[in-house]
Amino acid sequence: MNKFKYYFILLLAGIAMVSCNKGDDDETTVEVRDYKEQYKADKDSIENYLKTNYIKEVTADYDIVIEKIPAGGTQTSIWDQKTYPLESREVYNRDVYYTVYYLTLRKGTGEAPCNTDRIYASYKGNLLNGTQFDTSYGYGTTFDLFVYTSGAVIDGWGEIFPKFRTGTSTTASRWCNNL
Image (tube, rainbow, N blue to C red; front, side, top):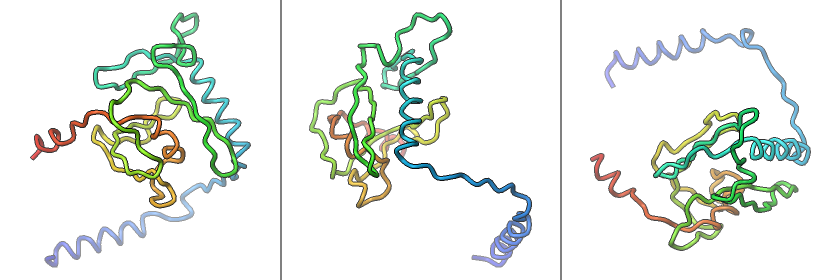
């Protein structure tokens, strides 16, 4: 590394240290809620969402578009529609039995993973208000479903992914085309 890069990095680090004063930030204290209490509130919100939103579209790539049913709308809610049946499974975690809801847009044809397997999946996570909070950006990511080993998988995935079967992968062609 030449001297210019070294000094430039030191300069940036120095600016970063003096530009943020602790007194500038408003501190917010968030009280940690009991898991059972939080789950009750979350379950009510999730079920309300499923009853007041509908599946507007499922694209050819199996991306799903969900929208709120407008006042007086005649759309069938996610909760009541039968095209992609809403399924659920009880998952035990942190001394609470949680209900995980899921839709199967297309059944795979291969084997189903075990809850201790490593999987390769593409995903997108959205909050109930539609805000996307995480994504694999259209490419798959490898996960160990056994959460105690990896610590990086979403709680409940080890219980839900065994409900799905493998499909066809286009990973090789995507990566080869990008070389």
